[in-house]
Length: 356
Image 1: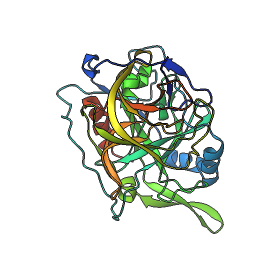
Image 2: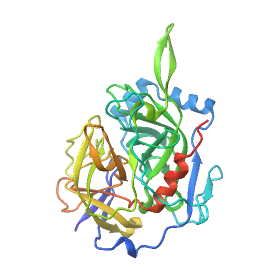
Image 3: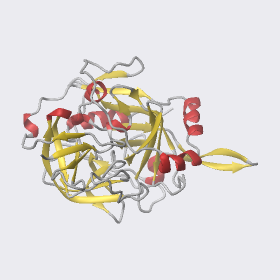
Image 4: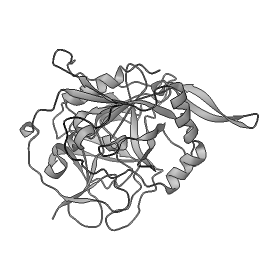
């Protein structure tokens, strides 16, 4: 039997039967709502999260924490079960037509370094995922998997930060960026529908820890895209396109081997095809075969038109589910939700968020 596994499950991977052959067009049209949730809006909240993730804790997280959490689907409901967030009415009169968003180079020039890791807590445990900086009006936007910021049972992740281009031993050469507001599709927030397993998070200005007079001090380093650049965004593309997927895999393979260390950026290239899995409400899945990513790669970007010379391309997916199609020793495919007009709506609200 062909099987799939949650790309981010910690410990034992949850195995599910895989089914292929359903067209994107056969899926039900998505609802007209975007869901937003505050993470650390005020300066005081931002500093509290920053204090949590000092270099030693980041180092320990890489060495000791499980990678991405496995998310179980909750009982369906009409809206997320939280009073802190809000549903944004995205009626046809208010929606903006999807358009390509151009990549943004770093303000200082040079090759962009948009890909990194997000660190956070869910259920009192520490985890990390892969993620990327995305071009936006606020120049302060991160894209990752929905399950790397929100659990439908537990709600939002706590102490959420993004570290682009992470170094070893807790180093953050391009800064640490605390999450301000989380934006996602309501069907991920409410029921864990893997057709919407993506999230865009606005972030505060970055900082580095320095030592002054024997004390650890936060030094402001500016806005995310100014420092590392931002990927473009394109939606509504057909399958059969050549893409490059990136991530920081760390978890075990089905045969319990550990070929990845979680500290080295890995990539897979190939042409996309369609796939579905009704058990995970995945009707619009996009599959990339020949990719052995494991836990930790979740949330890493899929790029169209990637140019190594600039480090930029167009975001057109994220690592969501890892597959073991032939049910043998190693994973052999990874899938993303289909980036459609609704994805642009989520992005558009996040990209225009005014960071406090």
